[in-house]
Image (cartoon, rainbow over all chains, first blue to last red; front, side, top):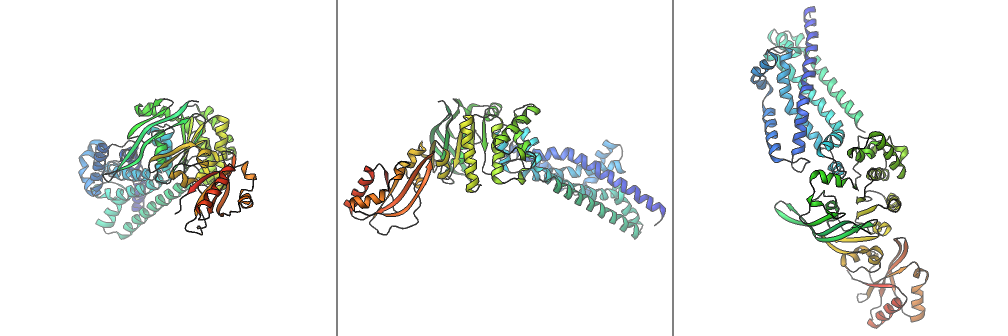
Length: 216
Length: 334
């Protein structure tokens, strides 16, 4: 491989990490509250509300059932509005975030649902408000499970970031596509794919380890 | 003494798959300040539902529950939360936060009440001392035994200085030795802090060990209520008899014989009644089961004996026991 390619791959790694990091943080900023809402408004839960639960659940399901590639294209006007451009690393963060939000929301909902109803009953018997229960009882109890979920979500975002290469996003995915697929440079294709696999593994195993450490 | 709880004609119905199910039916009772009140029944009898109506974790379908004269049904959510801080609850499965240390768990009710941090830490440490676990303050619940976890739950319950402690099958997940220790601790807290305690259980031994009064719940209805000693001596309802009578390991030898249960208290326990019966009347009885118990701190003995088939003989023997001051009850043959 030429020096130029190596430099390109290095830049690609940094871009991929940037996209994954920012998209994951933003997706959690929006997905965590939505997940909490889905959990708390479900039947029999602390803020049970059929209407809110149905509407939120419906939106999340629709967003989740769109194939990511279609979402990328659909969001081009929105991306341009937010970042001023529809290509490049910064622009890719927008569809990545939007695509990850419903996945994060469902994952958070499922983690919170694992918390024992007894814990919630204990909190209620102490006279805790619903908000207090969520912040001081439910979220802390669900932390190990939330961390495991986060490892899966971040890996998913990383995988999606490679797809953003198709519509002019940056990162390793774009390199694999341009050099490996269009130009038929197999060694570039395999190098980038290997790096992607390693990155996913590090994130997943790291997440598992942290989750295990937090579980008391 | 004042009344902590007053229940009047409480009903609770559940809807399950469109089918109405009645968990509580016309339950009226009151719980007095400073007493240890037991609520006993088989599983599914409605006792867990009953205790949850006391802090409105369950809404009643009919009737009223009042706490120091205040009807719980009329409270707004904020008011209910304030009232709940005066009643603490412990559970069969302890329900401690697994991701928080023992100390942090005990501080929770104070944190909810908005007590400043240094104060709540001091208070929590004081509570841990009462239950004898101050050295475990930095451990996580997973590292503790069941009995220790229940002690932490008790410390947590006491932290907010409640007026009443509700115990929902608090010893059912513990072995007999730990059960005894936890019950002794609850008894001690009842005496030293004048704390009213409500105990839900399915075990008569728990009631006998620490309760002053007991309500027997059967199929959602109040079967019997009264002093524990009185119910132990002379149970009137069928569910009470089932709880009080010892199981018979031996079947009666004769189909026409009659079974009776004899109860004698600590004083009478020194007299050899069966020997005297034989000596004075020449009649014999067959002992099917016998044991001794401590009920409310007084030693009681009880015995199920089989009487001979002849009617006159039976009457004579029963009269002999009654004259001796024993309490005698008929036992239905199964």
